Image (cartoon, rainbow, N blue to C red; front, side, top):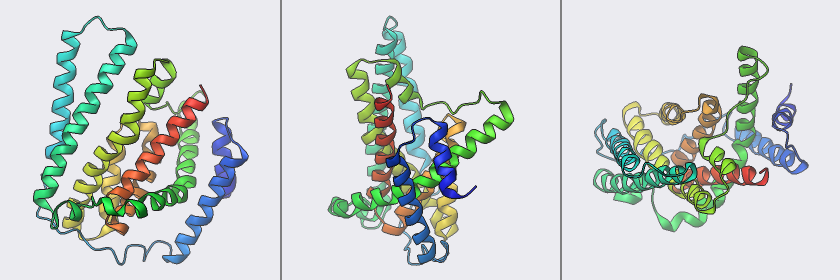
Length: 286
């Protein structure tokens, strides 16, 4: 089966293929093909990538990760004891609010660590607001380029799952998307959208790209091994194993964008656009 047929099959299996969907995937295939030819099938893709100068110890990326886990676990436990009689949607709202606060707090910690650890401080980390006008359109183009590969991973995951576990196998939606489907309450939906489109991309990209990928590159000296390993960590950090192949492919794109541009805003925008697309598709199909 050739690539266009694979992409068309992917959208057919989830029952919402349209002409626009197929055109988007076809555009992505052409862009990816052009990238392969331009970079000698990826071999020369990061030949001009410059390592980010820093003095991070190898353990430093784990510090904000443990802080985030500690904050969310402790706060969730306390709120469950103080507010035991909430309805289901109110409990979901509170859980997401705690998650949001924990991630915002951890983002602040990461920014402080980056200022102390990177040459040129936050600009060396890749946070420079003056590059937004370049990073947003580039992120949109990057996501369009990798979209057919993400769809292919979804198809392969579904087919492998059906082969192993039977024809009833389905990739479960993300927990937040399930909440949007299950509860119509506006406060919960607004909180989920803000968290998924703004807070989560900033937190996860600062952690996995900004800290982990940079630390790995400082040790391994090569960009692609650090991108692959940090992408594996990123995928494994998500609870639903059915999402791992697609998330790994998305993460490779975000890691490449970071190394190629030196801007952390670019993978943040890619991540945000991907999450926004998933939410829009979910709301459209409710």
